[in-house]
Image 1 (cartoon, protein in one colour):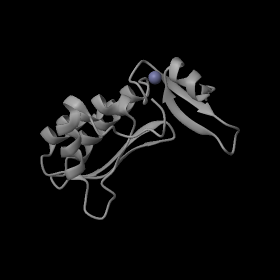
Image 2: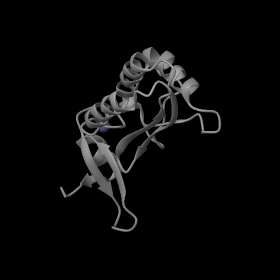
Image 3: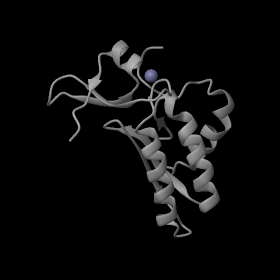
Length: 137
Ligand SMILES: [Zn+2]
């Protein structure tokens, strides 16, 4: 597998969840799920939890930012706190899961400071793509 991360066209058992997530993305926001295939099970399960908390919620964005899972939402039911804790738990799970293949991973980086790319990857994907373990701050 190569190329930029993105949800595969054939998302298998998760296709319905991904479609549901896309439909929740607000008009005006880009209906794009900006995470790699390795995180698809995590966002599918998060979608179920969020839907249970507030069936009317809408999504402003789902993406990987600096190697971390970011999920912005609006909750008309006012369940922001419950939804945010579900998102925080999923983001924590994603932080130790390779975004490319789903194997256990951690935050790694590629490039020099100033032009550094962060991504959560497993050792094998890191080696393939030239990522090195990121120093713990
Ligand atoms: Zn991997």
